[in-house]
Picture (cartoon, rainbow, N blue to C red):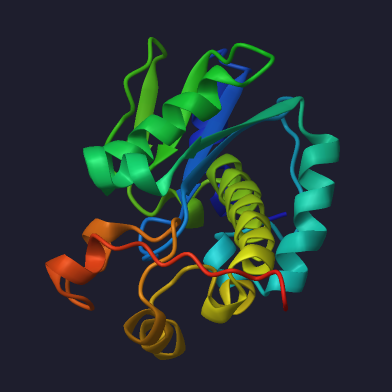
Length: 216
């Protein structure tokens, strides 16, 4: 057991706080798709070997741990904010909103929130923000895995609708292949227009590319 990942949890347990939710998001950086947050609550003392910051895990390892986490968790909640709302309220506010939604979707009301980052979403819960919390807290790391796997699955589904952008591979991030496709074909409805200003002109951004895939 990696006791280093339970430092914050143990501190709260020692204060008599048992129901703690870890919260993290996935998808701040991509140029397409939503931002997704997860909140997860475990029984006091629960631990799963191998859990870590989702970015440090292979896709296969994340998928395996995801299945274990959702089975062992007391409850978990997902919060999703669309690319259109990201364009309206900016990515920071969208990420915080997705965290708030994730907490609201928990079936069990936690006593305390451990949140990745340096900002706290607008909730009524007592909370602590932890910079790089997904590498320092078991609960936040677990949430990061749920959020990442959930978002990746969303982007893989979008690939079936907009295959020319290879969302199954880049998950909406601005890889060179993805950027080249945007320059060649324009934007599809799930691209974040505010994130594409360095790729396309203002006039091009205002014209969404919608392709007829009936013959594919």
